[in-house]
Length: 271
Image: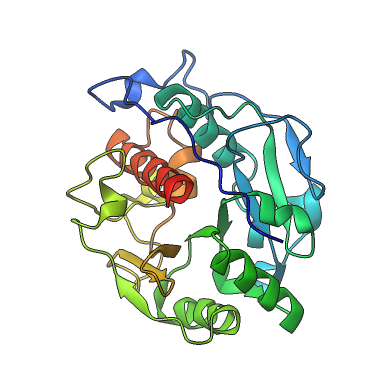
């Protein structure tokens, strides 16, 4: 099945400043609102873009998959609030038409090939059967884009790469430079720094593990040079989206997290 490549209208910046005050609602609550959810068979609402989260099976006890009801780790961490807040920002700050619900994508469902962009979190716990690895490989090589987030330190990196090497056996991982096109497709991002999880509010630490103090911005490209996997390690962008409307969480972290993901989405929709 050929991947549907959906091209949006040129996404325009609606404000010259990306200050979080432009995004917040009154009341200081932890989120911009609740989205409807869609699972497995895909949303019924026609949409130019679907905010899609990959549902994978977990192979490590530290981050098991608890099903749609639990939302307690593995693939479902921070779901649905982080995705919801990110989708609200996408609708406010771009002209991408995205009225559809949040979308959870199953690897064994053919609907996966309808979505050019997917997000996966906690990927140090993922595990694939040979068939699942082949399907995800087909998705990426037919035009798909996968953003991975929230894993920390060498141990978790090696676990992530064990699964990634099964999906893309000959993949080369490279460090992304500030000047790479993906950081200038919508916003010009000339400076990147470690984006912490919610632990920052209580500890002031930007890192979650003592062996994960340096942020990792990396990517895997296909044979034509297109980025197909964008890697955010030693960071937690999902928390930055989820906590963006909380006064205690600094705007500089959530602001960068939103700019990065909007760039990744626009890159995926146009490359």
